[in-house]
Amino acid sequence: MVNAAGKFGPYTGWDTRVLAGRGPTGAELVRSRIALRVRLGSVSPGDRLPDAGVLAEELGISEITVRRALEAMCQDGLLDRRRGRAGGTFVATDWDAVVAVMYDAEEAAALDAFHLLLECGLVAHAAGELGGELPGELPGGPHGGLLDSPLDGLRALVEEMELTDDPAQLLELETRFHLDLAQALGGAGIREFAADLLGRQCLLGPAPAPAQVRARNRCHADLLDELARGAMDPAVRAVKAHQHAEPR
Ligand SMILES: [Zn+2]
Image 1 (spheres, rainbow, N blue to C red):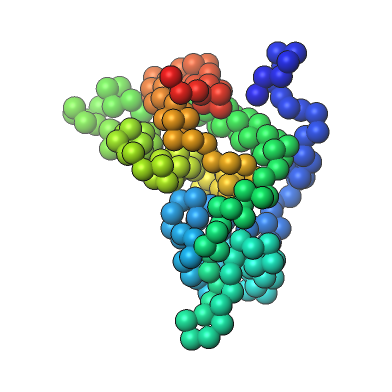
Image 2 (cartoon, rainbow, N blue to C red):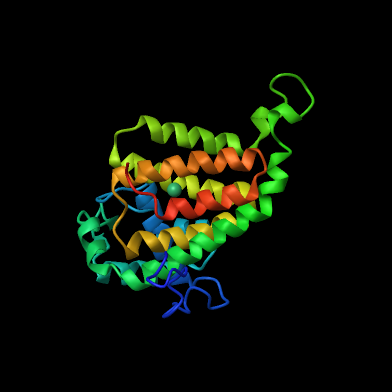
């Protein structure tokens, strides 16, 4: 984000919770991961969530922590507890409307800036290494190495985004791209870190409009091209352009 003075920011009012030197608390983890699942379409408004014990195992935290976090999310109106035989904890049918009330532009901007730094760092860290995996540069025939490149899965996502007209699927693919990018460039731990950031972002600001996601997807394609040829500076520029990509 470029401010009036032409500097990147915002750095003033940086939310220290973003860089507090600790992982998310159990409650934050439950909240951000459920938000991420809704964004990724693995659960939808009105759907029943897995039992607390299952969530606890999946997230690697205690069941009591999950129960408390779900209870807090019920109080916020994000989830809905129903009793009886068909009971359980459900994603609120008006999830989007409840989330819209929670938007916090300042924290969203801080998270966005932090996510940008993460991706710039990952790209700079990996650009030289991924260049060596260009299929043309590898021995072993016309397709040597092609299927092994971590960039191939990302390219497939870019193509899927090109083809879909469904706004929800566009958002899902947009989020998956950034999770998979973190995985490809930084490994599983960094993917989890990115999931924390992206899950929180889902609750802090409105989702980008379809036209804007399409504009971002052009930056995805540029990024992959630059990564494939090991061009670090242009790759970092593509990451930065993504943040301000506007529909043509
Ligand atoms: Zn994107």
